Amino acid sequence: MYRTTNWSSYNRALINRGNIAIWFDPTTQWYAPSKGKQGRNQTYSDAAIQCCLMIKSLFRLSLRMVTGFVQSLIHLCGLNGVAPDYTTICRRQQRIDITISYQKSSEGLHLLVDSTGLKFIGEGEWKRKKHQPEYRRQWRKLHIGIDAETLQIRAVQLTTNNVSDSQVLGHLLAQIPEDERVDSVYTDGAYDTKQCRKVIVDRQAQAVIPPRKNARPWKDKKMGSLERNELLRTVKRLGRTIWKKWSGYHQRSLVETKMHCIKLLGDKLSARNFQSQVNGIHARVAVLNKFTDLGRPHTRVVT
Image (cartoon, rainbow, N blue to C red; front, side, top):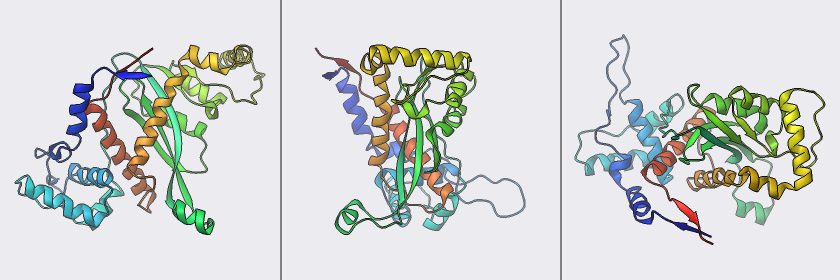
């Protein structure tokens, strides 16, 4: 059982999540500055398009509804501006670089990694249950890494569903700045491969990866393989439950909770273009990191 020790400040943070000023900053440079080059300049800045995409993700709106909603916010804030039309948002969504803010850990980074599937074509669950599934369902695979201390998402990658978890771990670690120390990486058994352990060691971090249930010792004599074989013997001797408690592996449930938060903003991708799907996910991540930055609960175990 857990008790929240900062309920007063966390309660204010929950209230501030609905503050319009949080999501629609009047100081944002709404229109794109002139580039001084030939040809037509972009009308709206990347910050304006990102604002629209974050509002779209937060309130689960269609692109047409976003235009009307943002225009009403501009009017309520007393600003002189015009919301981008839905065709502009749709077109710019394919190539915009979403800015994801985050707060660094006070010490070394402990990265918690997981993946899940997101549907973008197919029937709803009720229709599948009532009329049997059709073979039109298509999925994307979302991979994220969160900071165990700040609970903010530090790495995100969207792939097709035929890409394995172990293939993406290197790309996730590459999103962490080289000058930031990574102390440990927590993953599930799907990442129990030589390549995954190598990319973790290359960042001078500790790999906290449980061996698969049918795992066998690796035959080569490299340091990573010897450490993994020793872990395999330890798990077989003591049991997974004791090892997970000893290694702190249970904190990986925090990244599973973050996955649930992402799906609360929609368990289906509305865009059809892959790059638009990527930027739609990045907009969700920007929203969730903003939520966490406003305040998060601090808990302690109650015996």
